Amino acid sequence: MCISRSLRSLLAVGLVVPTLGALLAAPAEADQRWTEERATQWSKSQPWLIGCNFAPSTACNQIEMWQDFDEPTIDRELGWAKAIGMNTVRVFLHDQCWKADPASYLAKIDAFLQIADGHEIRTMLVLFDGVWDPDPRLGPQGPTREGVHNSKWVQGPGRKVLANAAKQDSLQPYVTSVVDRFAEDPRVVVWDLFNEPDNDNVNSYGPLELANKDEMAARLVRLAFKWARGKAPSQPLTVGVWRGPAWDMIDELNQVHQAALELSDVITFHNYDPPESMMQRIEQLRTYNRPLICTEFMARGNGSTFEAILPMLLQNNVGAYCWGLVDGRTQTKQPWTTWQVPNLEDPTPWHHEVLHSDGSPYSKAETDLIQSLSPR
Image (cartoon, rainbow, N blue to C red; front, side, top):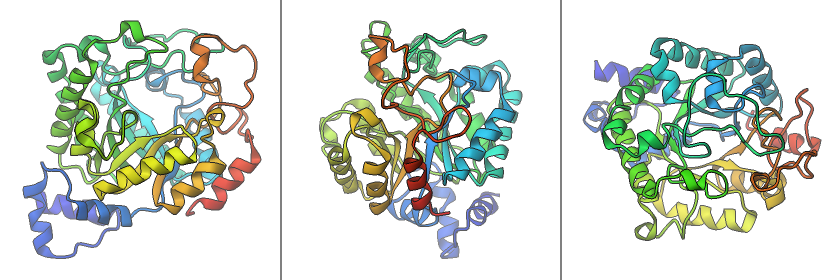
């Protein structure tokens, strides 16, 4: 059974099985990190990944996205993503949505993947998130704070669960259920297990954060890798690095970053800084001899622009996911500083986002560039 499952996975993504011996060895390694060779082979089988972090413009956060699952908007906006040359999106899930009704939630994820696949877009699924509101709750998410960047985005699982080892352990069924359901699904390109787990949200919800967040988040990172790997997914697992000193000096990094670099099959990272910083981070991460994907970039006012960054990522074979697609309820066209001083005007330049609500580009030069570099 294990052999046929592995074979189905390889055939689904177009990989060549080099030898029967290699195939027979796969089940014994199912609960282990991918070798550098396997990760490299996976990368060679993929097109250059170019896309965005996606939530429909009608959703203020990941809970609202899944509770009020807006298929017409998702379909329309992913069509726009395809039209400008994107072939992948990074999408955030939430454990509370699964807990409320596992079967219904898995069906919604499947529906999303089907819509995306219809536009020739593959999806990176994110299971947990350490950024913004530490106290997520189901139900109506309420109005956004006018003029404030990502004012309603929520963490998952949130501080109450993260602070308690037993509550962390109770998340295992969520992880294993979701990963097992889509472990052989070619519409899923990568599993991103935890987004910025150690983020202290100092400029927004900082006073509400855990004093030992790095320690507790690192614990859940390691558990999530263990649980997900136990389902032997055909897709690589990752947790991204995003701050701290030189990333090639692993012993000097905090517990979350050490776990991410020790356990990820492919290396993912965030960088919202100018080209010099991006290149420095790429060079640091190359020392791990694994495929690289930048899962967050593009903050125009920070010098992280499509024009400056995309050609560099393509030249260095680094996957590229900007933050955002269509201007909407996340309000991420507003800069991070609006947490201190809200901006009630249209910002110049937009911080994130690529398209207006009608699908027209914020900058045609940007969308022309994306189209020109896209492998499709």
